[in-house]
Image (cartoon, rainbow, N blue to C red; front, side, top):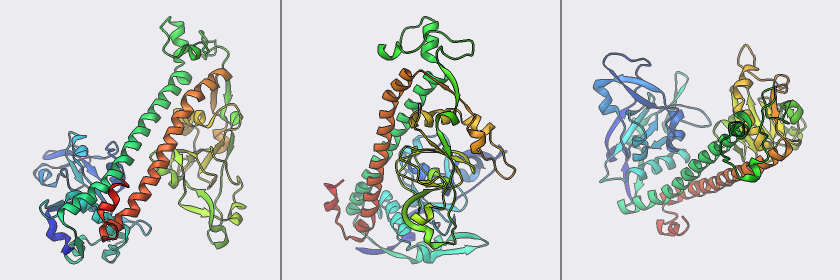
Length: 438
Protein backbone atom coordinates (compact mmCIF):
# COMPACT_ATOMS: atom_id res chain seq x y z
CA UNK A 1 0.00 0.00 0.00
CA UNK A 2 1.15 3.52 -0.83
CA UNK A 3 2.53 5.77 1.93
CA UNK A 4 0.93 9.22 1.93
CA UNK A 5 0.56 12.35 4.05
CA UNK A 6 -2.85 13.66 5.08
CA UNK A 7 -2.15 17.15 3.69
CA UNK A 8 -1.69 15.69 0.19
CA UNK A 9 -5.17 14.09 0.23
CA UNK A 10 -7.23 17.20 0.95
CA UNK A 11 -8.83 19.61 -1.48
CA UNK A 12 -9.72 22.09 1.25
CA UNK A 13 -9.39 22.65 5.00
CA UNK A 14 -10.39 25.47 7.32
CA UNK A 15 -10.21 26.33 11.01
CA UNK A 16 -13.48 26.72 12.89
CA UNK A 17 -15.27 29.83 14.15
CA UNK A 18 -17.21 30.72 17.27
CA UNK A 19 -18.79 33.99 16.18
CA UNK A 20 -21.23 35.96 18.30
CA UNK A 21 -24.08 34.91 20.52
CA UNK A 22 -26.51 37.65 19.45
CA UNK A 23 -27.73 38.84 16.03
CA UNK A 24 -25.31 41.44 14.66
CA UNK A 25 -25.24 43.38 11.42
CA UNK A 26 -23.05 41.63 8.90
CA UNK A 27 -23.36 38.28 10.69
CA UNK A 28 -25.55 35.30 9.73
CA UNK A 29 -26.94 32.46 11.88
CA UNK A 30 -25.29 29.03 11.88
CA UNK A 31 -25.20 25.94 14.05
CA UNK A 32 -21.78 25.30 15.54
CA UNK A 33 -20.41 21.82 16.15
CA UNK A 34 -18.11 21.66 19.17
CA UNK A 35 -15.88 18.74 20.10
CA UNK A 36 -18.36 17.83 22.82
CA UNK A 37 -21.05 17.50 20.12
CA UNK A 38 -19.20 14.99 17.95
CA UNK A 39 -20.93 11.87 19.28
CA UNK A 40 -24.37 13.49 19.12
CA UNK A 41 -23.78 14.60 15.53
CA UNK A 42 -22.54 11.11 14.69
CA UNK A 43 -25.87 9.81 16.01
CA UNK A 44 -27.72 12.37 13.87
CA UNK A 45 -28.82 14.54 16.81
CA UNK A 46 -28.47 18.27 16.09
CA UNK A 47 -30.87 19.47 18.79
CA UNK A 48 -28.15 20.55 21.23
CA UNK A 49 -25.96 22.46 18.78
CA UNK A 50 -25.57 26.11 19.81
CA UNK A 51 -26.89 28.84 17.50
CA UNK A 52 -24.20 31.41 16.78
CA UNK A 53 -23.78 34.31 14.36
CA UNK A 54 -20.87 34.17 11.95
CA UNK A 55 -19.51 36.91 9.70
CA UNK A 56 -21.51 36.63 6.50
CA UNK A 57 -18.51 37.17 4.24
CA UNK A 58 -16.70 34.09 5.63
CA UNK A 59 -19.65 31.82 6.39
CA UNK A 60 -19.82 30.29 2.91
CA UNK A 61 -16.24 29.08 2.94
CA UNK A 62 -16.46 28.04 6.59
CA UNK A 63 -19.65 25.98 6.22
CA UNK A 64 -19.18 22.23 6.21
CA UNK A 65 -20.68 20.06 3.48
CA UNK A 66 -21.54 16.39 3.12
CA UNK A 67 -18.38 14.28 3.05
CA UNK A 68 -16.33 16.57 5.29
CA UNK A 69 -14.61 15.26 8.40
CA UNK A 70 -14.30 17.52 11.45
CA UNK A 71 -11.26 17.11 13.68
CA UNK A 72 -10.88 18.52 17.19
CA UNK A 73 -7.65 20.46 17.67
CA UNK A 74 -7.91 21.52 21.34
CA UNK A 75 -9.79 20.82 24.54
CA UNK A 76 -9.05 17.18 25.21
CA UNK A 77 -8.15 15.58 28.54
CA UNK A 78 -5.54 13.10 29.70
CA UNK A 79 -8.03 10.23 29.45
CA UNK A 80 -9.57 11.46 26.21
CA UNK A 81 -6.97 13.42 24.24
CA UNK A 82 -7.96 15.83 21.53
CA UNK A 83 -7.89 14.71 17.90
CA UNK A 84 -11.37 13.18 17.85
CA UNK A 85 -13.21 13.23 14.54
CA UNK A 86 -16.76 13.14 13.19
CA UNK A 87 -17.93 12.50 9.63
CA UNK A 88 -20.65 14.71 8.12
CA UNK A 89 -23.05 12.63 5.98
CA UNK A 90 -25.67 14.14 3.69
CA UNK A 91 -28.39 13.24 6.22
CA UNK A 92 -26.87 15.65 8.76
CA UNK A 93 -26.74 18.49 6.21
CA UNK A 94 -30.38 17.78 5.23
CA UNK A 95 -31.51 17.82 8.88
CA UNK A 96 -31.22 21.62 9.22
CA UNK A 97 -31.91 24.72 7.16
CA UNK A 98 -29.00 26.55 8.78
CA UNK A 99 -25.34 26.29 7.76
CA UNK A 100 -23.17 24.04 9.92
CA UNK A 101 -19.68 25.07 10.93
CA UNK A 102 -17.13 23.66 13.32
CA UNK A 103 -16.26 25.64 16.40
CA UNK A 104 -12.96 27.20 17.31
CA UNK A 105 -10.43 24.56 18.37
CA UNK A 106 -11.61 22.38 15.49
CA UNK A 107 -11.26 22.36 11.71
CA UNK A 108 -12.92 20.63 8.83
CA UNK A 109 -11.12 18.47 6.28
CA UNK A 110 -12.48 18.16 2.75
CA UNK A 111 -10.82 15.22 1.00
CA UNK A 112 -10.06 14.95 -2.69
CA UNK A 113 -12.38 12.07 -3.69
CA UNK A 114 -10.08 11.08 -6.53
CA UNK A 115 -7.40 10.24 -3.95
CA UNK A 116 -9.24 9.07 -0.84
CA UNK A 117 -12.79 8.01 -0.08
CA UNK A 118 -14.34 10.59 2.31
CA UNK A 119 -15.72 7.99 4.72
CA UNK A 120 -12.47 6.05 4.65
CA UNK A 121 -10.65 9.22 5.73
CA UNK A 122 -12.91 9.45 8.77
CA UNK A 123 -12.31 5.81 9.73
CA UNK A 124 -8.57 6.16 9.14
CA UNK A 125 -8.41 9.13 11.52
CA UNK A 126 -10.52 7.20 14.02
CA UNK A 127 -7.93 4.44 13.92
CA UNK A 128 -5.07 6.92 14.36
CA UNK A 129 -6.86 8.47 17.32
CA UNK A 130 -7.80 5.27 19.15
CA UNK A 131 -4.39 3.71 18.56
CA UNK A 132 -2.88 6.90 20.09
CA UNK A 133 -0.54 7.31 17.14
CA UNK A 134 -1.55 10.97 17.26
CA UNK A 135 -0.09 11.38 20.76
CA UNK A 136 3.33 12.71 19.61
CA UNK A 137 1.46 15.64 18.10
CA UNK A 138 -0.27 16.65 21.36
CA UNK A 139 1.04 19.49 23.51
CA UNK A 140 -0.12 21.32 26.63
CA UNK A 141 -0.47 25.01 25.86
CA UNK A 142 -1.62 27.50 28.53
CA UNK A 143 -3.36 24.68 30.36
CA UNK A 144 -5.23 23.41 27.27
CA UNK A 145 -4.39 20.18 25.47
CA UNK A 146 -3.83 20.96 21.79
CA UNK A 147 -3.43 18.74 18.76
CA UNK A 148 -0.80 20.04 16.35
CA UNK A 149 -2.83 19.32 13.26
CA UNK A 150 -0.55 21.01 10.72
CA UNK A 151 2.52 19.04 11.83
CA UNK A 152 0.49 15.82 11.84
CA UNK A 153 -0.99 16.45 8.39
CA UNK A 154 2.34 17.32 6.81
CA UNK A 155 4.70 14.88 8.55
CA UNK A 156 2.82 11.74 9.57
CA UNK A 157 2.79 9.13 6.79
CA UNK A 158 0.34 6.23 6.59
CA UNK A 159 -0.54 3.47 4.18
CA UNK A 160 -3.38 4.03 1.72
CA UNK A 161 -5.21 1.11 0.07
CA UNK A 162 -6.68 1.35 -3.41
CA UNK A 163 -9.83 3.44 -3.75
CA UNK A 164 -11.91 0.30 -4.24
CA UNK A 165 -10.59 -1.23 -1.02
CA UNK A 166 -11.07 2.09 0.78
CA UNK A 167 -14.75 2.11 -0.21
CA UNK A 168 -15.21 -1.50 0.85
CA UNK A 169 -13.57 -0.90 4.24
CA UNK A 170 -15.64 2.25 4.80
CA UNK A 171 -18.80 0.42 3.76
CA UNK A 172 -18.07 -2.48 6.12
CA UNK A 173 -17.49 -0.24 9.13
CA UNK A 174 -20.31 2.07 8.10
CA UNK A 175 -22.79 -0.82 8.00
CA UNK A 176 -22.06 -1.55 11.67
CA UNK A 177 -22.38 2.15 12.51
CA UNK A 178 -25.66 2.41 10.61
CA UNK A 179 -27.16 -0.48 12.56
CA UNK A 180 -26.11 1.19 15.82
CA UNK A 181 -27.80 4.41 14.71
CA UNK A 182 -30.95 2.51 13.67
CA UNK A 183 -31.15 0.88 17.10
CA UNK A 184 -30.72 4.26 18.77
CA UNK A 185 -33.51 5.79 16.69
CA UNK A 186 -35.72 2.83 17.52
CA UNK A 187 -35.00 3.31 21.21
CA UNK A 188 -35.86 7.01 21.00
CA UNK A 189 -39.23 6.03 19.51
CA UNK A 190 -39.81 3.34 22.14
CA UNK A 191 -38.94 5.77 24.95
CA UNK A 192 -41.35 8.34 23.51
CA UNK A 193 -44.13 5.72 23.40
CA UNK A 194 -43.50 4.71 27.01
CA UNK A 195 -43.52 8.36 28.16
CA UNK A 196 -46.72 9.07 26.24
CA UNK A 197 -48.53 6.10 27.81
CA UNK A 198 -47.37 7.09 31.30
CA UNK A 199 -48.42 10.71 30.82
CA UNK A 200 -51.84 9.75 29.49
CA UNK A 201 -52.63 7.25 32.24
CA UNK A 202 -51.03 8.80 35.31
CA UNK A 203 -50.53 12.52 34.64
CA UNK A 204 -53.45 13.54 32.43
CA UNK A 205 -55.81 10.77 33.62
CA UNK A 206 -56.76 10.45 29.96
CA UNK A 207 -58.97 7.33 30.08
CA UNK A 208 -60.93 8.60 33.10
CA UNK A 209 -61.47 12.04 31.54
CA UNK A 210 -62.52 10.41 28.26
CA UNK A 211 -65.13 8.38 30.14
CA UNK A 212 -66.41 11.48 31.93
CA UNK A 213 -66.74 13.32 28.61
CA UNK A 214 -68.40 10.34 26.91
CA UNK A 215 -65.61 9.89 24.34
CA UNK A 216 -65.02 6.59 22.58
CA UNK A 217 -62.61 4.09 24.18
CA UNK A 218 -59.08 4.17 22.79
CA UNK A 219 -57.56 1.32 24.80
CA UNK A 220 -58.17 -2.41 24.68
CA UNK A 221 -61.56 -3.19 26.32
CA UNK A 222 -59.93 -5.18 29.15
CA UNK A 223 -57.68 -2.22 30.06
CA UNK A 224 -60.37 0.41 29.43
CA UNK A 225 -62.70 -1.25 31.92
CA UNK A 226 -60.13 -0.86 34.71
CA UNK A 227 -60.23 2.94 34.73
CA UNK A 228 -62.79 4.73 36.92
CA UNK A 229 -65.28 7.09 35.32
CA UNK A 230 -65.07 9.82 37.96
CA UNK A 231 -62.55 12.25 39.45
CA UNK A 232 -62.80 12.56 43.23
CA UNK A 233 -62.79 15.74 45.29
CA UNK A 234 -58.96 15.57 45.59
CA UNK A 235 -58.56 15.78 41.81
CA UNK A 236 -57.54 12.17 41.15
CA UNK A 237 -59.44 9.22 39.70
CA UNK A 238 -61.69 7.47 42.21
CA UNK A 239 -60.07 4.70 44.27
CA UNK A 240 -56.59 6.01 43.50
CA UNK A 241 -54.54 7.20 46.46
CA UNK A 242 -51.84 9.69 47.36
CA UNK A 243 -48.50 8.43 48.63
CA UNK A 244 -44.87 9.57 48.61
CA UNK A 245 -42.02 8.10 46.64
CA UNK A 246 -40.20 7.36 49.89
CA UNK A 247 -43.10 5.12 50.99
CA UNK A 248 -43.12 3.22 47.71
CA UNK A 249 -39.41 2.54 47.06
CA UNK A 250 -36.23 2.22 49.09
CA UNK A 251 -34.27 5.44 48.52
CA UNK A 252 -30.53 5.10 49.14
CA UNK A 253 -27.34 6.94 48.23
CA UNK A 254 -23.74 5.90 47.84
CA UNK A 255 -20.16 6.90 48.59
CA UNK A 256 -16.62 6.80 47.23
CA UNK A 257 -14.00 4.48 48.70
CA UNK A 258 -10.73 6.25 49.43
CA UNK A 259 -8.86 6.76 46.18
CA UNK A 260 -5.62 6.64 48.20
CA UNK A 261 -6.19 2.98 49.04
CA UNK A 262 -5.25 0.75 46.05
CA UNK A 263 -6.89 -2.27 47.69
CA UNK A 264 -10.30 -0.69 47.07
CA UNK A 265 -9.92 -0.29 43.32
CA UNK A 266 -9.51 -2.40 40.19
CA UNK A 267 -11.77 -5.27 41.19
CA UNK A 268 -14.73 -6.68 39.29
CA UNK A 269 -17.58 -4.83 41.05
CA UNK A 270 -19.20 -2.09 38.97
CA UNK A 271 -19.10 1.33 40.66
CA UNK A 272 -21.06 4.14 39.02
CA UNK A 273 -20.75 7.91 39.03
CA UNK A 274 -23.09 10.35 37.25
CA UNK A 275 -20.49 10.51 34.46
CA UNK A 276 -21.39 6.92 33.57
CA UNK A 277 -24.96 8.06 32.90
CA UNK A 278 -24.06 11.27 31.08
CA UNK A 279 -23.05 9.55 27.85
CA UNK A 280 -25.84 6.95 27.70
CA UNK A 281 -28.02 7.00 24.60
CA UNK A 282 -30.81 5.19 26.49
CA UNK A 283 -31.66 4.85 30.21
CA UNK A 284 -29.86 1.52 30.44
CA UNK A 285 -26.69 1.01 32.52
CA UNK A 286 -24.71 -1.98 31.25
CA UNK A 287 -21.22 -1.10 32.48
CA UNK A 288 -19.22 1.48 34.43
CA UNK A 289 -15.92 3.21 33.82
CA UNK A 290 -14.44 2.16 37.18
CA UNK A 291 -14.67 -0.97 39.30
CA UNK A 292 -14.03 -1.63 42.97
CA UNK A 293 -12.97 -4.66 45.00
CA UNK A 294 -14.84 -6.48 47.76
CA UNK A 295 -12.83 -4.38 50.20
CA UNK A 296 -13.92 -1.24 48.39
CA UNK A 297 -17.55 -2.33 48.54
CA UNK A 298 -17.38 -2.39 52.34
CA UNK A 299 -16.77 1.38 52.16
CA UNK A 300 -20.07 2.01 50.33
CA UNK A 301 -22.88 2.18 52.86
CA UNK A 302 -25.62 1.18 50.41
CA UNK A 303 -23.64 -1.88 49.33
CA UNK A 304 -24.21 -3.62 46.02
CA UNK A 305 -27.50 -2.50 44.48
CA UNK A 306 -29.53 -5.14 42.61
CA UNK A 307 -30.27 -5.34 38.93
CA UNK A 308 -33.28 -3.15 38.22
CA UNK A 309 -32.32 -0.30 40.57
CA UNK A 310 -33.41 3.08 39.22
CA UNK A 311 -30.56 5.60 39.29
CA UNK A 312 -31.01 9.38 39.33
CA UNK A 313 -28.02 11.71 39.42
CA UNK A 314 -28.66 14.01 42.36
CA UNK A 315 -26.12 16.75 41.63
CA UNK A 316 -23.81 18.22 39.01
CA UNK A 317 -26.24 17.94 37.29
CA UNK A 318 -29.54 16.64 38.62
CA UNK A 319 -31.41 14.50 36.13
CA UNK A 320 -29.31 11.79 34.48
CA UNK A 321 -31.30 8.55 34.70
CA UNK A 322 -30.83 4.83 34.06
CA UNK A 323 -32.10 1.48 35.21
CA UNK A 324 -29.15 -0.71 36.19
CA UNK A 325 -28.89 -3.96 34.25
CA UNK A 326 -25.97 -5.10 36.39
CA UNK A 327 -25.40 -5.23 40.14
CA UNK A 328 -23.77 -1.91 40.90
CA UNK A 329 -22.42 0.24 43.73
CA UNK A 330 -22.77 4.01 43.39
CA UNK A 331 -21.03 7.14 44.59
CA UNK A 332 -22.56 10.00 46.54
CA UNK A 333 -23.95 11.68 43.43
CA UNK A 334 -27.06 9.49 43.21
CA UNK A 335 -30.56 8.93 44.41
CA UNK A 336 -30.89 5.16 43.97
CA UNK A 337 -34.37 3.63 44.09
CA UNK A 338 -34.87 -0.07 44.79
CA UNK A 339 -38.38 -1.04 43.69
CA UNK A 340 -39.69 -3.95 45.76
CA UNK A 341 -43.22 -2.75 46.56
CA UNK A 342 -46.18 -1.63 44.47
CA UNK A 343 -44.34 0.32 41.78
CA UNK A 344 -42.19 -1.32 39.11
CA UNK A 345 -38.83 0.15 38.20
CA UNK A 346 -40.15 1.14 34.76
CA UNK A 347 -43.01 3.05 36.41
CA UNK A 348 -40.55 4.76 38.79
CA UNK A 349 -38.23 5.72 35.91
CA UNK A 350 -41.08 7.33 33.98
CA UNK A 351 -42.57 8.92 37.10
CA UNK A 352 -39.23 10.50 38.00
CA UNK A 353 -38.75 11.87 34.48
CA UNK A 354 -42.30 13.27 34.47
CA UNK A 355 -41.71 14.94 37.84
CA UNK A 356 -38.20 16.26 37.19
CA UNK A 357 -39.33 19.87 37.65
CA UNK A 358 -40.56 19.00 41.15
CA UNK A 359 -37.27 17.24 41.86
CA UNK A 360 -35.38 20.41 40.93
CA UNK A 361 -37.71 22.53 43.06
CA UNK A 362 -36.83 20.38 46.08
CA UNK A 363 -33.09 20.74 45.50
CA UNK A 364 -30.86 23.22 47.26
CA UNK A 365 -27.20 24.11 47.63
CA UNK A 366 -24.91 27.12 47.50
CA UNK A 367 -22.15 25.75 45.23
CA UNK A 368 -24.36 23.56 43.04
CA UNK A 369 -27.92 22.30 43.23
CA UNK A 370 -28.41 18.91 44.88
CA UNK A 371 -31.50 16.89 45.75
CA UNK A 372 -30.97 15.09 49.05
CA UNK A 373 -32.64 11.84 49.99
CA UNK A 374 -34.49 13.67 52.76
CA UNK A 375 -35.96 16.13 50.26
CA UNK A 376 -36.65 13.49 47.63
CA UNK A 377 -38.57 10.97 49.73
CA UNK A 378 -41.59 13.23 50.50
CA UNK A 379 -42.35 13.99 46.82
CA UNK A 380 -45.94 13.01 46.13
CA UNK A 381 -46.89 10.13 43.86
CA UNK A 382 -50.44 9.10 42.93
CA UNK A 383 -50.99 5.35 43.10
CA UNK A 384 -53.52 3.72 40.78
CA UNK A 385 -55.33 0.50 41.61
CA UNK A 386 -53.24 -2.70 41.55
CA UNK A 387 -55.06 -3.84 38.40
CA UNK A 388 -54.11 -0.71 36.49
CA UNK A 389 -50.50 -0.87 37.69
CA UNK A 390 -50.30 -4.48 36.48
CA UNK A 391 -51.85 -3.55 33.14
CA UNK A 392 -49.35 -0.71 32.75
CA UNK A 393 -46.42 -3.04 33.40
CA UNK A 394 -47.80 -5.59 30.91
CA UNK A 395 -47.83 -2.87 28.23
CA UNK A 396 -44.67 -0.87 29.03
CA UNK A 397 -42.18 -3.34 30.55
CA UNK A 398 -41.83 -5.20 27.19
CA UNK A 399 -41.10 -1.82 25.57
CA UNK A 400 -38.28 -1.23 28.03
CA UNK A 401 -36.99 -4.77 27.55
CA UNK A 402 -36.76 -4.06 23.81
CA UNK A 403 -34.74 -0.92 24.61
CA UNK A 404 -32.37 -3.00 26.76
CA UNK A 405 -32.00 -5.60 24.00
CA UNK A 406 -31.16 -2.89 21.47
CA UNK A 407 -28.55 -1.40 23.80
CA UNK A 408 -26.94 -4.79 24.36
CA UNK A 409 -26.85 -5.36 20.61
CA UNK A 410 -25.25 -1.95 20.15
CA UNK A 411 -22.52 -2.88 22.63
CA UNK A 412 -21.77 -6.03 20.61
CA UNK A 413 -21.82 -4.06 17.35
CA UNK A 414 -19.51 -1.40 18.78
CA UNK A 415 -17.07 -4.05 20.01
CA UNK A 416 -17.09 -5.72 16.59
CA UNK A 417 -16.54 -2.39 14.81
CA UNK A 418 -13.72 -1.36 17.16
CA UNK A 419 -12.12 -4.80 16.82
CA UNK A 420 -12.22 -4.68 13.02
CA UNK A 421 -11.13 -1.04 12.61
CA UNK A 422 -7.35 -1.43 13.26
CA UNK A 423 -7.21 -4.85 11.58
CA UNK A 424 -8.82 -3.58 8.39
CA UNK A 425 -6.62 -0.50 8.34
CA UNK A 426 -3.44 -2.51 8.80
CA UNK A 427 -4.43 -5.19 6.30
CA UNK A 428 -4.33 -7.90 8.99
CA UNK A 429 -7.94 -8.71 8.06
CA UNK A 430 -8.93 -8.47 4.40
CA UNK A 431 -12.14 -6.70 3.43
CA UNK A 432 -13.45 -9.85 1.77
CA UNK A 433 -13.16 -11.73 5.08
CA UNK A 434 -15.54 -9.29 6.79
CA UNK A 435 -18.36 -9.16 4.24
CA UNK A 436 -20.18 -12.26 5.47
CA UNK A 437 -19.65 -11.28 9.11
CA UNK A 438 -21.28 -7.86 8.67
